[in-house]
Image 1 (cartoon, rainbow, N blue to C red):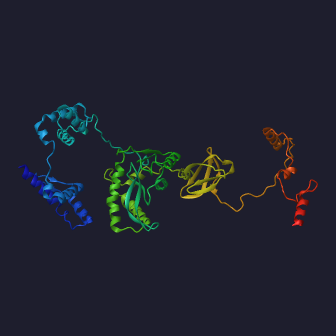
Image 2 (image 1 turned 90 degrees about the vertical axis):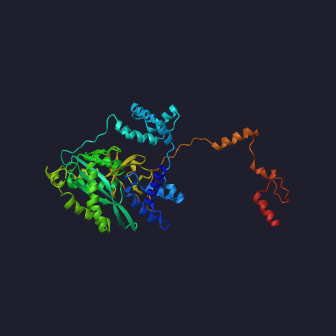
Image 3 (image 1 turned 60 degrees about the vertical axis):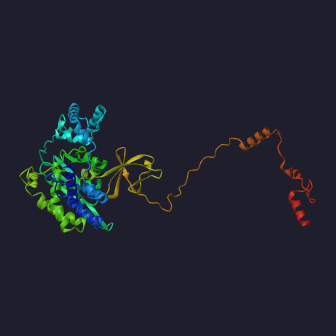
Length: 469
């Protein structure tokens, strides 16, 4: 019976992989067939319908190529005999789990081995405990539950996220890029406050969208975001601080509070992205134009299943929303960075060099600027405006001559440094007498018959020698 059952399972596995196991298939063609097989249900010999992962089907193909149909037969478990011979081990494993619910299957297997000398696999213990309802998740003292939350009014809480969109042509590189859809949804009304596709997923894209949203819909009280790089940075924190918006990040691996955003993401994929991909997109601008029209005419005007009314109607019911003045808005979306001024009264920013006031040399200053417009960079020192940074230009002459004031003639000290050195040298050698340089010719031992007498100068002797020659 065991042999018949093993053969039946082997034949079942062969039926699953038969089409994809053809040697004439290319890797790409085989991948298509494997994915198709993984997406179907297959009638198992035990009467159940089962689904198999791509990894499992690929493994069966490799095994069949190595050992044929026999290799597809299930291999007996190494611990099967021990388990059947000692069924009381499971009762002890259950007691060990109940004693300490956090005790893992590996730890229980280790305890059973050291206590009875019998090896039982972790998988066997895990499966048996799960069948008895003793898996660790079921024994938690306080099972984790998720409550429902809804803001009490519009603009009380905004939720932001990034959704990966389709590939669009990118003229800067003559290739395509994956468009990133930055979204903001109002928690109370489910209104899609604003959304825009960008070529890059960074902090600048997040701030551009937030500025557009505040200009159109007013100022929120709370901005709720995940811990991604576009939302966890100093620039967004400064923006929210200047505007008085509380920035809240969700806890990692905790979906609380993001259900509305995730539901909207699914709706956008089904109702817009699927149609846009089918239609074809020629540019990022075209994609944004189509998305903007779809948001205004479809997404924000449909009747929401939860609230039973259109998001735009629910959002506008409370009247005009809190706005922010233009000066504060401009300052909030400027970036801030700290630099130390060099000896030439310059600083570097975004790969460029800028001149600042010379009085700020060797001091740390704050630069406030719009990352999309570097024409105006304000300089702050100790919290106060200290002028602007202008592009640094090197000319032919950096300084012009300036007449200097006449300095007074210093008084002579009378110190002859070299005389003191010579005196010290004489004392060190013990001579104590100065050398008469006029007598150096005598020390040279000259044998020239025309050498000058004591009364003849060197110049005259040289003239006589030349005449004699």
